[in-house]
Image 1 (cartoon, helix red, strand yellow):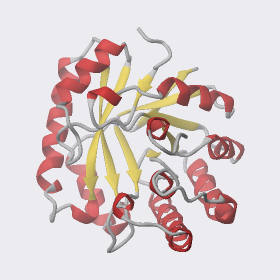
Image 2 (tube, rainbow, N blue to C red; image 1 turned 45 degrees about the vertical axis):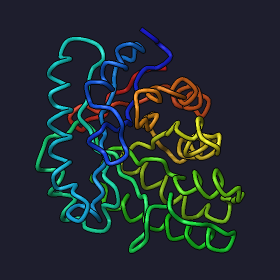
Image 3 (cartoon, rainbow, N blue to C red; image 1 turned 60 degrees about the vertical axis):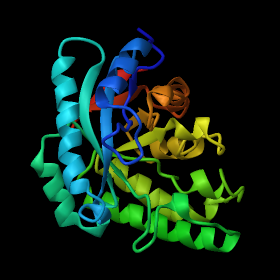
Image 4 (cartoon, rainbow, N blue to C red; image 1 turned 120 degrees about the vertical axis):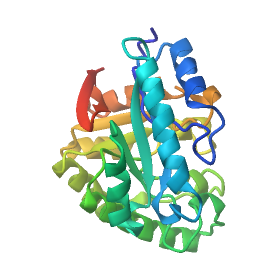
Length: 270
């Protein structure tokens, strides 16, 4: 067993529009890598639930993950059935219905785009519009945290993957310190986790999402739980950067990373 990769709690299978491998292929690769615990967290974009077919893909993703959970019962890796719930703020009633339709171990919440706009991946950026978009993005994240029916907030600084990583625009997050502190404080108060998303370590941005200082700030504001996920969309990326993410969590003051079983936090000491 690879003790440095204690878990990987963010990955996508071919049941996500951008995933390449089946649930079984992801699980088998995790077994090869010796990862003890994984969470299969296929996409559910609430704002596109009917228009882009998530109404069909979400039940199929749950079924595939549940089958792997049963297949792996008593062996390694332990498979947790998860979901990444994108843009729940566009329709909280629908988001609630999605989460009650099936039993999940783990719910990630995320914001990939603003209302009536495409994913941040597809936008072009200047220093002016980046500042405007980030302000609205953090505002929407705060709304999601206020809603609160999730376990971990995914990739807090997601737009920087493209603003800085792809367009080379450096952002001083100090101008958003008030908004970010409000998000992190509320996460801590509600007993929610902050995700350390390690995808940026294999991408041009070269940092975790969020980076170390924000993880440390979460701890200073009373945050107890962090989850770690590679955000892999293929077997090649599964587990990448996890050891570094766990080391970052420890450096930021956390003595454990968290996995969720039936929506309950379970800490793994580091």
